[in-house]
Image 1 (cartoon, one colour):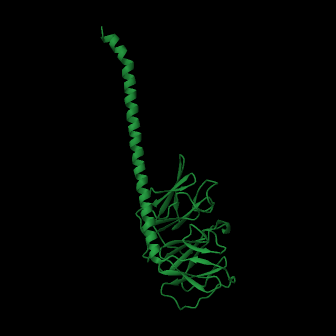
Image 2: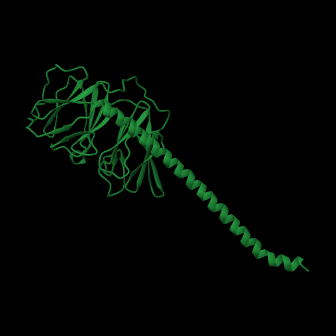
Image 3: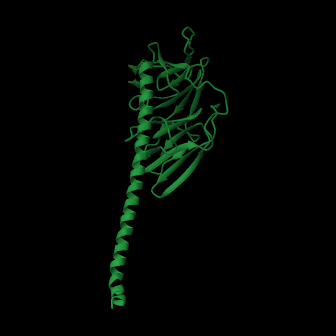
Length: 288
């Protein structure tokens, strides 16, 4: 499978006093409890897959793949930004200068075509990373299907789409399946749905369905977000992540100031106790 190229990046997992650093070998990383995840979380209450992180160009994006308290999504602004997963904290960053060793069009220039037996529907892709599934927190939601809540990560650069399986119950010994899709490919068959990759300008090409299965007729309700709404959502989520990072930094500064004040008060109290203890001795010696 040919994936996009990025410079070296890493993940740091903290749990109490323990800390471990993992060098990531692929341009995407699944984070969760499952042993096939790129970043494993040693917490039996954690989801099998809690986040997907995607590195490209100068950016790292994170998206939750299950309902999480205090979840984050979108581009990470600072390497010290931490993802809270159970009792663990995960941070991501570049091992060297961020960037890509290849020249690529990092803007999505393809759409996802979906057919569930009642004709094709086009889902516009307006951002590099999206989540396809049946319910929240998926971005591309197809209600009334056999998809998981967050079933596939849809990653689009230029006219190529990669689909990464997020359902750990379907994984084999090699881990999650990653499919590369182009406009000339036959469909990918998934839970009763046929999916194709199509360029933005492609509207007349005859589609070839996969022969692996026949699509049943499903009552599917597709939530299709307007591109302008997607753009507003992108700006809002990035702004929210940046605001959260600023608040975290201010909280760290307040804690540092509090520690310094407590230490100063403790030193003053110790000095007073020492002086009061030695004062009678000094008076008895030098007071005569």
